[in-house]
Length: 387
Image 1 (tube, rainbow, N blue to C red):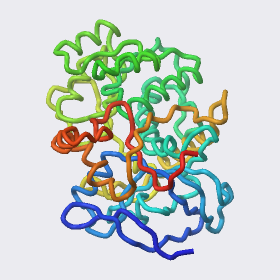
Image 2 (image 1 turned 90 degrees about the vertical axis):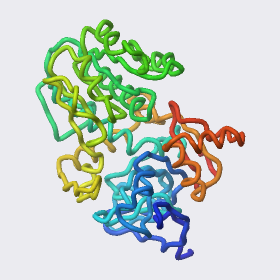
Image 3 (image 1 turned 30 degrees about the vertical axis):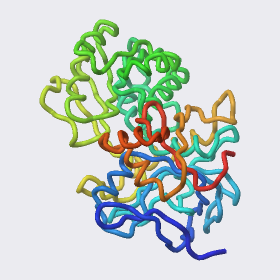
């Protein structure tokens, strides 16, 4: 076996390039993954544009592939198993590299068994965004005193409140789609009804309604907050999938009473205008990894309960649907498979998260795959396989 592999690593000035790096060896309770597909997240592009760790660190969060080698103490995985997981490379406080490489290392209990009916490309969309949503909805579990639809260290007495109204802002995003899926599952597992409302661009309205959203509103409409109040009677819980500028304040104006509002960014949204009694709650998904993480110019400390939450959530995903064990219990994102591999991620994949210049140039050049992201996840194949 060769001793080096291709990986996308940070480089000066504020970019990433494909380089040869040593193939990693799994440690105790770790597995090595032959990476088949990677999914892109805005945070991956952020680490490249800001270089929090300097050059030479492998970037990338979401991966899917097959187990290539198991370390000492591993009991739940065998060579050849189909596996997905998330990493947090490219930061100074993180001991392991990221996942945009031919091989990657995952901790055995922070990884997901891919059901037989799910492709590598679909599976790569699941780890980071689904865990982010599960953590955000924990605030919903606390607010309504209900238990998660999976084993969790956070337990409550089940309440008998009236069906809550939940607003998902920017629901056609990866986070929004996972939120809808998990809330619907929560409704089924708890025997309760959850009324879901959403904002999105008009072209995605019917798609979201087909997924179970009661009503969808155009976020560009000047009256959307009033329209939400009229339709819902007042929102009891919100999930801001964008969390920037005025989005959080606008969502807070739709509440019928005091409540929690999950945000996914800590500093990008304006506090001015947030309604009194509505509490924005932020939690970085990295807190669930179990070790200190450098993020947003601060170090997030290891949180054992959050790590346990992550482990139990990934067990839940690995078990498959209660009706069909060949699929995940929550739906993966629709995927847009991009042409090329690692070398195309920075010039094309990451540019889809940035300003519109690259998109306009691509439109002129007829690059259909460079259309704006809407209701799908950007995925690259590192192996030419869909199975």
